[in-house]
Length: 396
Image (spheres, rainbow, N blue to C red):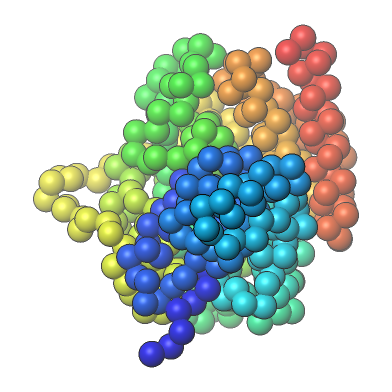
């Protein structure tokens, strides 16, 4: 028997992190929890540490780390608690960690995910911002290391499963015509466009098919999530933006498709449950039980498809423009979106103003090459400052 793989979960208290821990717990002979990170969700992280007893835990602030360390020691749990970005990078790159689930939402996940790649880990990528912000640098770091990168987003995991093993030779050389990236359309797929300025954060977070965190739920409602996934797909599969087509599929049963030059279209289907792609990536190339119930096509009855509406979903158009522009444009897009979504969730702006802020930031910043991580982080900071200036200028 081989020793169980040691798993670090970056973003353990989020929906992806919890789903990962559910799959890991189903296979104690194959996996052990090595490290858990939870930013500021101390109670949730403490509860997870009591269950899984990791060697390390990481939180945002040193004071919180001290408090959690004290609580765990009092409960007889020998977990060492670290703090800050340095702690995240340490557990991501630790020599004893075998697998790193990169599930920290937003730009905060960039450095620790890069650390895991540079340390040669099996990296399960759920943090799309790492590729959106610094795709060229990230993929070069991957080529320079012995790391294995496996996509966790249900769409990218589906594409990975539908591509031939040698797709890295180039999509055209393996007969691929295009990638069909499916989208549910979110909660506002049929909402009259003139009513979108009135929708609330609660409505935006009420996804019809998936259970997700608030930020990614808003991104799904605006279809910015699909725009970020388009950019991510281009880097993961060496595709031009024109080779990636977004298709609205309300049932969320087909998670994405690959269209081949001979007329074949391969699709990956399954119930909308993130444990499926997580289990696939954890065990790849083997298959393990994920806890997800079998797909009942007879119960579903029909599968529907439609083209996305640019008027309803301007964020998708902005993301495609950023993908075509390249350089730091995707980093600008991502940063402006993060500030705008936070403002919407805090009820400072309307839902429709998310796209307005992003468009204004992209129009105000000249962009430029992403030759280094410093270029990317500088662009991120500029975009956040511009977005906050917009909020201040409009009294928000």
